[in-house]
View 1 (cartoon, rainbow, N blue to C red):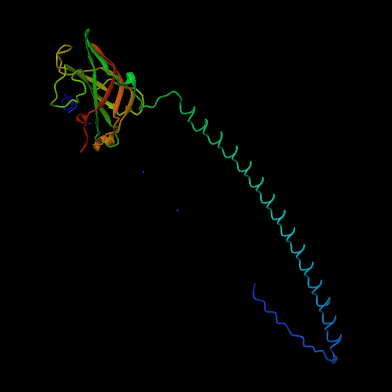
View 2: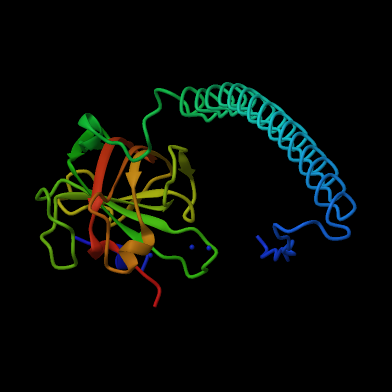
Length: 294
C-alpha cells in the first residue's frame, strides 16, 4: 500500500612578328655595293658579325647550357630542393621531425596510457555505480522490535520533486513483505508489514546519508499485522542509507519515459527505540510512488 499521503501528505609566345627584309640579288655583274660593302658577305653580318654563331648567343651565350640554368642553375638538382632541400627527407619532418614518434604523442605523450586515465588513473577495479549483479539484486531487510522480527523481501521506489527548483530530488522507498513484484498503490492489498524510507536525496555515488530528525533520512514502520508493534507509525531514531548502485533519471520519469534499467540498490541500518532495521535492498521503479510538482 502506498502510504505517502498518510506519512508525508515528491546542449564549413607572344606572337613575335619578325619582319624579314628580303635581300634582292641577280646573276648579273655586281652593281655598286653588291660585294663586300653591301654586307652580303661578312659585312652584312650573316656570319660571325650577325651574331648567329656564336654572337647570337645560341651556344652558349643564349644560356641553353649552362647559363639558362637548366642544369644545374635551374635548380632541378639539387638547388630546386627536390633532394634534399625540399625537405622530403628529412627536413619535411616525416621522420622524425613531424613527431609521429614520439613527439606527436601517439605513444605516451597523448596520454592513452596512462595519462588519459583509461588505465590506471580511472581507478581500475572500481565497478561503475550503475552496475548491480548477483546479491546486489536481492532484497532482505530485517525489522526487529523487542526480539520479534520480520524479513522484508520486496522493495520499490518513486521520486519526490522538491517545491524549490534548486533543491535536490528525493526518493520515496517502500520495503514490504507482501506479494512480490506488485507495485504498491492506494488500492493494493495490505502487506503484513512495510517500512517507508524517505528524505534521502537521489544518489549519484555510494556516499552514505544519515538522519536523526524528521527532515533527514528516516524509516517509518507500519505494522498492519500488529505482530511487532501496535503503533500506527513507528519512526526510526537514526538511519543510515548507503547506496550500492543505481540507474536513475528524474526528468525521464517526470516525462513518463523512464529508462529500461531503473533501480536503486542500497543498504539500510536503522535504530528504533526498541529495535533495529538492517539489510540490503534492490528497489525497482513504481510510478505510483512518484510525487511531482505541477
